[in-house]
Length: 206
Image (cartoon, rainbow, N blue to C red; front, side, top):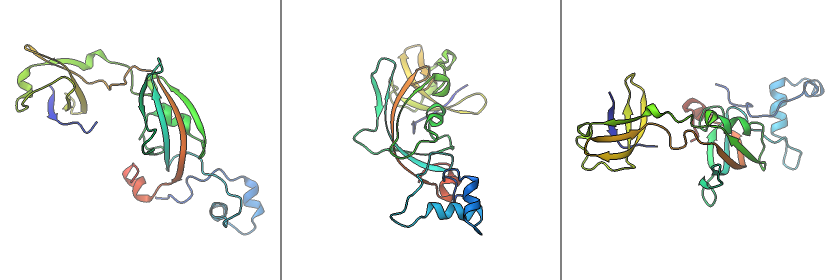
């Protein structure tokens, strides 16, 4: 049985984002430990050569993106707005995109194709159900496109959208709107920085 609630809202940080430092680095900087060597390289004086941060776990990444479907129709885009910020390694974005962006640096652009299994999953027909209208008691008018938070039989939270409203019941769909779709991303990396301890603790960007 579904329990419906109206309204959908659709440690050590220090050097985790630094590029790999070669063994020669440890040998060449006499008397400096590995950790201090990394610090030394990352904080070179202004005007000195710097090593760019790469996208890896525990970095905060800012990207601009355009998402299109297999026919080339634009589904979503950050163009003209604020970039998308995410905490790498925290599951903030779909795994297929996050995996392909790993190792990129600021200024990189990349085209990424994500299959359903690495995006929003395959479409599951069993997540489409028709429920009695009295389960929506208290809602003045249920309309197609309305979104709800539902609690499934095992207590898991799931988001559903109304697909049809009829006299004999209301049909809801628990699939993500992009489930079963091949997704094409055009991405540009705008910024990378080390995450704060609070961001790592909370699992998202502040």
